[in-house]
Structure formats: structure tokens, C-alpha cells
Length: 231
Image (cartoon, rainbow, N blue to C red):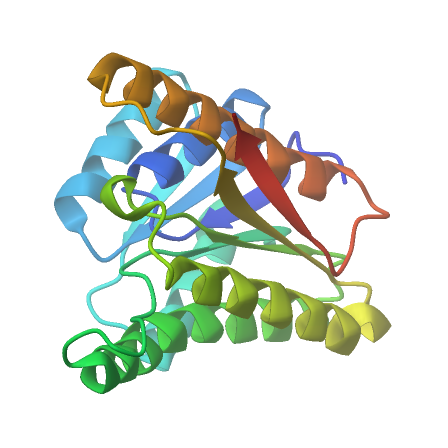
């Protein structure tokens, strides 16, 4: 897919990764629809994109009802044009371990709020692209939080992203809609040096952004999850 002039909708755009992805695709000439439930962070990303001359609009998701998510797709088309790409960002806490306190309640929260919103954006993108005959791309993305990068529950989140990416790709192949995934993998960071740790996180962020670009740009990529690695 040609990234320049394409319309890309990015969820959790106010997060550090969401902001980095938004700025990167904007620099490549894409039209950017920024979406977040946190209006303050969303506005910060919007101002940063406007500062580099991006063609973008910010959409505050007041709640995570499916009707409101569908309305954002309609608004994006009206203001930016037909949507080509969804960057679908799973952001939040890792899935709990079996023996962690209140693990069942935490798992229920993850499924009912975090996973449901993630799934709803994927569904709306698929419906939109099918109805408008768009040969679009859905990029499923997840990252660990800095303090929990070795949390055992993060493996479950990555597995869920990978599984959904594969199943969605099979379901949507008949409509020429591609689905790819990006998840980080960290190797060998046992140091306590804050500067070294920050440098590693910046490099990992760069790898995640470039992985998302690779999936969108390469028409043959479908049904697989890339692991953004930093060593």
C-alpha cells in the first residue's frame, strides 16, 4: 500500500507509542485520524502533528460504546476521506497470572473493557472496509509497560494479539483486507542504569513504529505478528 495520501486511524494516539506512530506516518504523507479516551494526551499528540504540518483530525472517544466507535469512522471519512488503515493498539495492564491477588477480577476487567474495545475497533474497521470496498490493512499492536516488561502475564497478551491477527486475516482475506500484528520482545536488560534503560526503550519504540510501517507498506504481509526486538 502507498502510505502517502492514505487515511490512517490510530487508537490510543495520546500514548507515547501512539504519538510516535502518528508522527511517523504523518511524516510519510498520510492523513491521520487520532483517537483516544484521554483528551489531554490526545490534544498533545494533535498539536505535535500539526506542528510538523500533518493533515490530521483528533477524535475524543468519550466512552467505549460500539455506536461511538462507529461514529468515529463516519467522522473520519467525512473529514479526511475513506479509511485505508487501522492501527489498533491494545494498551493497558498485562493479563494477570494465575496466582496473583484478585486474578479473576483483573482478567474480567481486561476482557470486558480492554479487549472489548480492541475487538470493537477491529470489527468496525472490517465492516467499514468491506462495505466501502477498501483493500485496507488492520495492524494489531500491543506493548508492555516499562515497569512490567518481564511480567509473565504479558506473554498471554501477546498470544491473544497473535491469535486474533491470524483468525481475522483468514476471515477477511476474501475481502482483500490484510491483518498484521506487532508485539515487542526484550532481551538482556538487567542493568539498573536509567539512561541505558531509556535508550533501550527509545530503540524499541523505533522498532515498533518501523514494524507497523513495514506491515502497511508490504502488500504480501498478512496473518503474522512481527516481534520488535531490542538487545
